Image 1 (cartoon, helix red, strand yellow):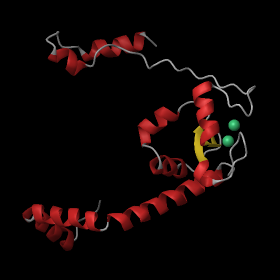
Image 2 (cartoon, helix red, strand yellow):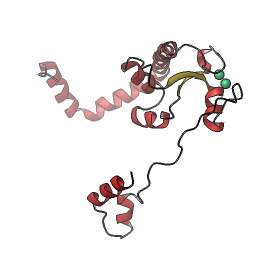
Image 3 (cartoon, helix red, strand yellow):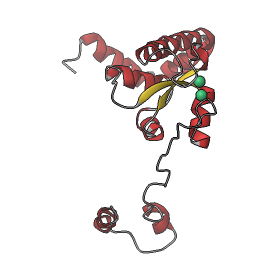
Length: 171
Ligand SMILES: [Zn+2]
Ligand SMILES: [Zn+2]
């Protein structure tokens, strides 16, 4: 951020002095215009999704479905949950993949929801039962109760260096 303009300084002062009023106005605007705002947001997300689906072939890699409403981006490497934790879901995910230039070597592919869910849940899709998907589904290393809870229950505080040591040792 460069230097603030006079207008920005004035706006900031106005906000500080009238914070309740400004926030009430913003809330009212959001409520009043919710339908059109959400329509715009949906259109933006839809356009993002179309670009992503197109970049990865435009059809379900399993059954060939082309109807965009039925399609999703699949994480063939099994890192979908981790990816969503990191960047968020839906439009945040499309935005992240697009910002990285739609990488072609990251295991992303287009699947329809049916094939996606069958693969995730059963490890295969009935369209191609010979194509198995095996992912390591073990939970991440569990190093015990989180620190705050443990302390609240009256047990001695956990030393952070110890936690790091256990983590390193269990790798
Ligand atoms: Zn499919
Ligand atoms: Zn399928």
